[in-house]
Image (cartoon, rainbow, N blue to C red; front, side):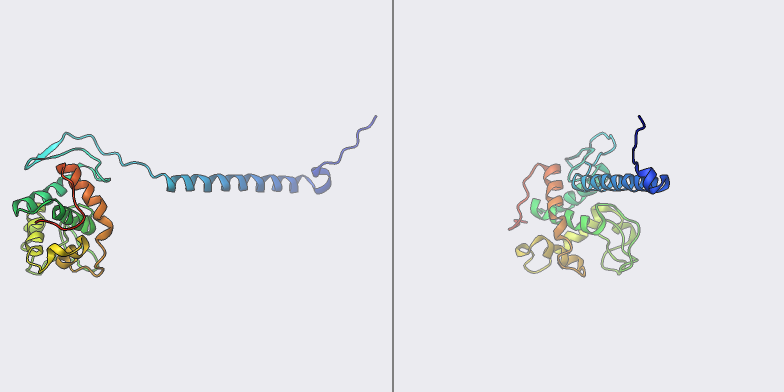
Length: 206
């Protein structure tokens, strides 16, 4: 008995069927790609820091990290900011303000370059070469740069009643007064992680 069958190939031709199969494959790949993209953006990978022995800076033990996403090379700079604040009798809240400012300005990197707005800016705090922030060497020394930041901050009238970003803006005079606010949680975590002291959000006592 002869079998009678109708296939897609017989009706539309083999070429059309091949094109159709190709479209289906592309759609499946596209869907899988979008699914993977969604998963990667919603589940960011944790920071992995290079292995490193702990460093001690003026009693502050700096681990390899990460703390708030920062590894030891940047945490060492944060420790210098904390050290400068302590030398002036400044407590944890305002230590974190300094760290927050350095995060907002340089990502806790001791940058030897500026940007389009301030091509002469240098260091953790991106201090300008305008005579107000000392020499190039002083601006590039994290401890000295932080000391100059705090020295100016404590001369601002009413600085202890300001929010962290207002304190930073009073010294740095950024185009956006709220620029530093986004870095406050990370700065708190860094100071708390390095010192073991709780950082209050308001009412600094020095």
